[in-house]
Image 1: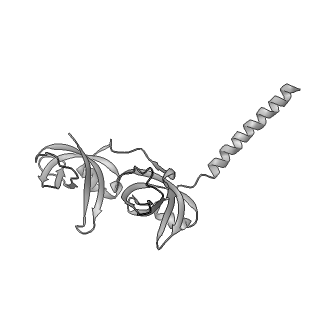
Image 2 (image 1 turned 180 degrees about the vertical axis):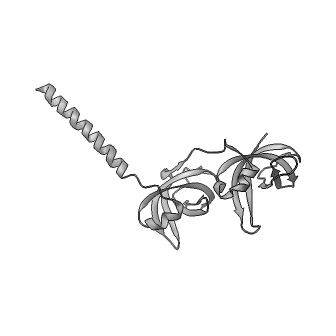
Image 3 (image 1 turned 120 degrees about the vertical axis):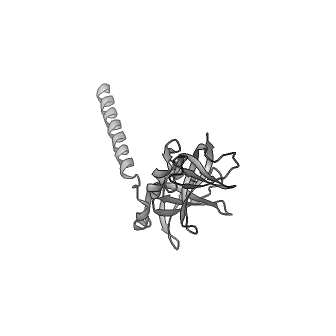
Length: 207
């Protein structure tokens, strides 16, 4: 009799675990493209993109701009000053509520932001970026090329020493580099509307 009761208890426990599993799946917020966030006003959604801008308010909240190809969305992060270690170019997945405050944005907390595996280890050529710039917008990547022009805060990378292809790179650190030298640069691609050109913001150089 005791064995029978034990078996029944185990069966019901297993059924309970299975039910909880399916409930968790059904309650998991849907992954929504950035360009379709406005359709889900008032709902909890998940979005994925690259951090293009970070701002901290006086109250300690954060406002992120998330981009993916040509789409973007503002992310309002409550009380982010305690443990905020995101950087521009990080790929993240955000879970939050879609709200309208003059424009559509997502309200969330830092605990509901997950950094996705970084892509800086993938090395691209200048011509790859030039052919599909929107594909790389905001992504943290590594570009390999030859220095074909060099200024104090700006350099231009080319695919080879003869100057084929060209990518404008903004240096954020002082680095001894020579024209004609081959370098790998880690950073992220942005668009300068005033200059009407794409720029690569360098975060580090790899020899």
